[in-house]
Length: 69
Image (tube, rainbow, N blue to C red):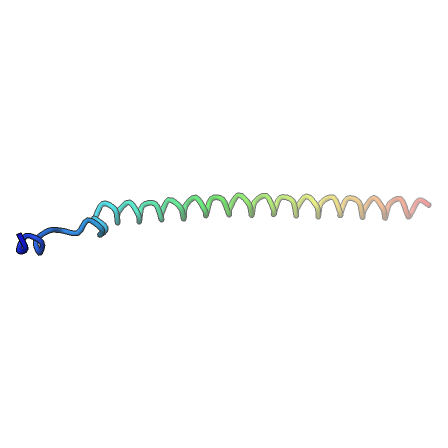
């Protein structure tokens, strides 16, 4: 009985499939985060472009109205 204990495998280690799943989940997480950051940066860039366009139109309008007065 005592000699059987040395041949038993411990069930607490990671198996090869667990490692593959862990790496796969990491790759999926990186791709999802990249897409999310790309979307957020796109929304911020759109807001900045819109704000600049509105500011330029307001500035040109202010210049035109100031000339008439």
